[in-house]
Image 1 (cartoon, one colour):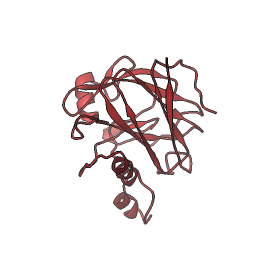
Image 2: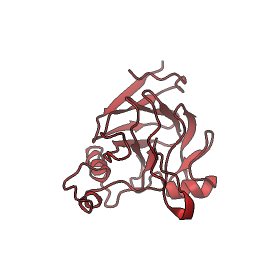
Image 3: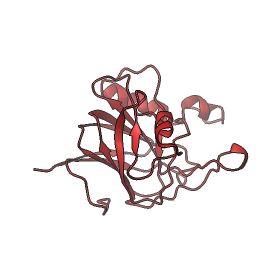
Image 4: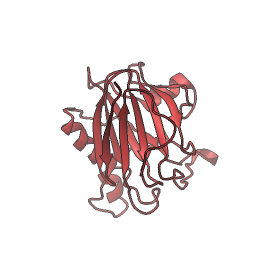
Length: 206
């Protein structure tokens, strides 16, 4: 018997879900133009988590291609990149936005992905002191000339999705990016689906 579990992540907020090795995680941009900060923490040891820098080291590129894998800070595969129905713009260089970063730009107490990560982590029973770096799904910020980032429009459309195959038992945390500059003026919902079998390519977004 196959099954599906879902977690809705409201704009400016977070969600988490436990995933077993062999299951599939699909992240859906519900309305379009929304970046999601994705994290994965080992259920067996919360000091092991998905690492963008170790992933870059193993794959030799800025972001994995389909068929390649994401790795933890202990060099173990955590996900295989199975499918991508979006334009394919993603990021593994940016840290999560945070309260101090916004305050330095005159935006006090702005919702942010760092606070949202720690809120979800506490609910999931994770006691990190330091936040792992995120995998920024649907974020269009490629490095340009002289090493400067190009801040591009988020190109994902409503229903676009990324599918990952879990290689370890992990806790998946997803935060909806709060930076209005890159998400079309306001943060909108994302959805995390966990499938027992690899889902089809067609999106189930409303």
